[in-house]
Length: 161
Picture (cartoon, rainbow, N blue to C red):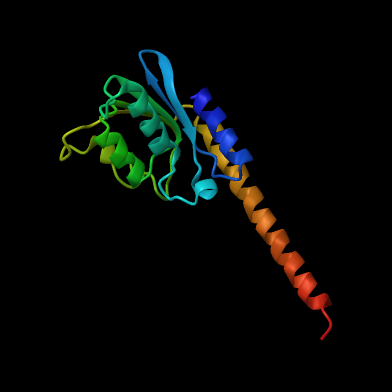
């Protein structure tokens, strides 16, 4: 999970929502990624999807059996679907996502018996650290937007009428 946190920090430095992921196969990290939605302007460039794509290329298979996915935030519905489709057997995540999490918070997609695959899930690993990086990021974002709004108002009020 520490390596996933390092990926999340890379995302934050880029102005991306700080979520990171790594995929482990036979005790080795074979793929790592962080969110890049703002950079790519592509809604599907979540850390989990990118790490799954990289791992599939490395292993030469869409089936990621015998792997473990570590991710700093509970996966959303899109990422949970990709996890199921790629047959990742184990998912370890840090912080819960009460607004979009589909592993434990809103839905239990990775353990729904109606699907032809399910995952062992471990939650809460380094949860405080994983949650804090997100809290800090969104606090700074709100402060920046507030300062920008204030600067715009000041500029508008100083313009000649």
